[in-house]
Length: 373
Ligand code: SF4
Ligand code: SF4
View 1 (tube, rainbow, N blue to C red):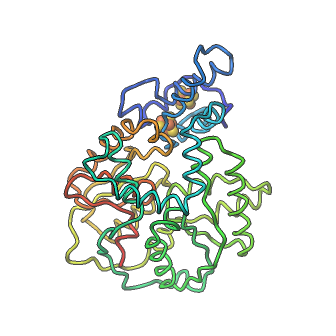
View 2: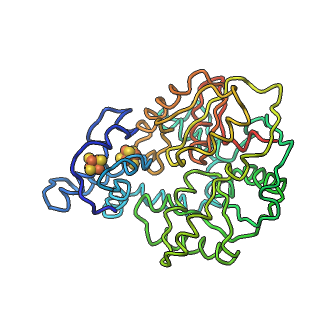
View 3: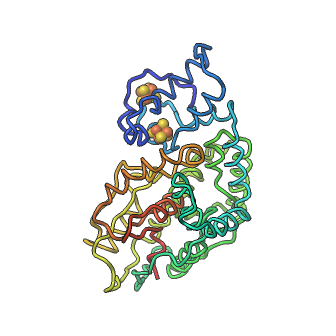
């Protein structure tokens, strides 16, 4: 809850990727929590613009929330500050998310048309990420499924693809459907929309609530089956829904299943052309332990040579609109932890697009679904 009392213990300071990358204590979760208290008490002598700027500087990784002994939800504090002090970035972010079907493919095509040398250095990574949104060839498939277990045969299931796979990376959802088909799962049709987590992060709770109701209605209409999800951020966004009925809330929580858990026992053959230097980026929003990493370790064995733990990719959501240089600083720490890997996989739409756009020369990166033939 956003109104729990911060005791300034500092437990969150050890996990904040923004603080670790910059060393700037004013960007830490404790400082944000304290700022919120000072504002509530009328003791902060700050302009609305200054509050908006500080509230804008958060990656929304949720790592601080996970370790706070008081249950302080700093990302929610930040969302409320962003709602109370709206600026053009929030409007831009909202427009970007609520018109994803038209803006994402068009924005990607426009970014591809900007010659590399003409883009200001500050915006280079953002433009590359935009350009890469619509995919291009993606990763070369290196894993072929050769044996499907019977454990899910005949089960009816929903697939939550999320905005990225729905609008620009359709290959991810196609591959997921083919694998579920191989398992003998009947994938039901559903009128899912965006998970709403990007809107919640900037305090647009009414708009996010409408999306939650739409997605819950689609699940109910399908008979409340399991919902397979292959984006860690979508999964966390969906897990945050709170249906009024407690039995239904529990059923919803149980229904949400990482796709990698459903696929875990498929046997894969690795292409002889596969590199033996594969890395994995653990998304900030992924469950612990991470089922995507378990699936990849089982399929790829000792080809997995590096994995991030606490390093954030630096995507940052709305933050990158105002502070792309901070996003780049955090991102550099992530690549340092993946040194030695020639191919980097991850299980979050945002991390996958960010890593594909920022990969060092000679390294490729993408969602692990791209690796499967
Ligand atoms: S937000 Fe939580 S973990 Fe961070 S200083 Fe306050 S009480 Fe401690
Ligand atoms: S959500 Fe992440 S970036 Fe934001 S304050 Fe918490 S730990 Fe730091």
